[in-house]
Image (cartoon, rainbow, N blue to C red; front, side, top):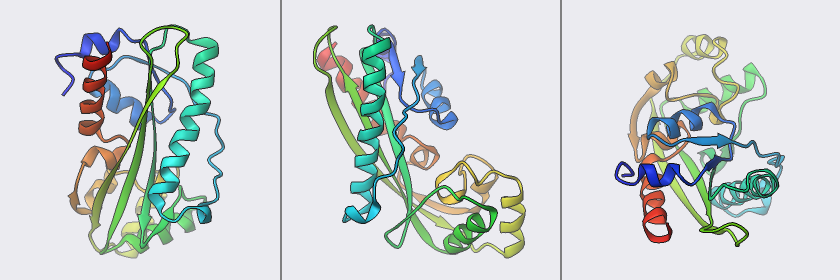
Length: 212
């Protein structure tokens, strides 16, 4: 979706507002060149203040990128485009965070076993056409349904023992060995990895064509 405007995008001195290695790999996969600026937002919004998980992830993504924007304004004057995102895993309306322990990771995976859950990402794009002008904002959400096979206790134990669970929402990574747990995905696969590439690319293309 961006192959015909890739050089124009890369001329914008892009900042990725995320330290996630998966998001970095996905942007590199589609040919984008970027500088990483990590958000210092604590991601401590009270979930009970939000009626739906999508509202929570939307607010978190926006707060994360607002922190990055302040850093960009101070140190990256040539930047014209900031990309940020937040992703949550949801089961029965409940947000499943990154597990804090092996036991918590096992409980999460067992709760997914033989069932469907959702992965929701909110992407935020900030862009400006000239220096010292106000940032424009676009934000959108992508929801993907993920069906897990039935997992035995021994499979869960062995996976958690690899250590792969602990830096991932929901306690698994679809791009690794846990991909073998997935029976079906309905929606954007890359959303489950960390960034919905097709809708993200489509919006980036529209921005560069319309504004640059």
